Amino acid sequence: MQELGAEVEGDAVLAGQGHWLRSVLLPILQRSRVPSYLIFGNSDCRANLAPLRQDAAAAAPHVHILWNEAMPVAAADGQPAFTLLGFSLVPPSNHRLKVGAAAAAAAFGAALQP
Image (spheres, helix red, strand yellow):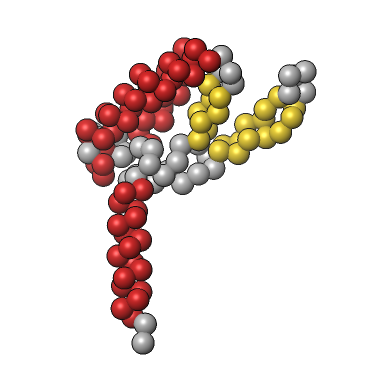
């Protein structure tokens, strides 16, 4: 069974993005030791979310990956400072497909105008 995202984007896109997130980005953030908060967005394949979270939890606990959730963030003294909201649209397909759909919808709408 294919993961959500692979069926729309294809296995190569899903694998390539997953490889970059886990083999390039995560090691950079791991070395930085700076608390980092990532929010999956329009061009991210949702199928890469769980593996990235699993790798981050094991290798870089200061890296947090948010998706449709709120996370309290503490100040240096440990007191609550603010709440970070990770609510973004992560559709099964990336923005390339949505741009094409939006252009088609706009052309169709324009054609309906008197």
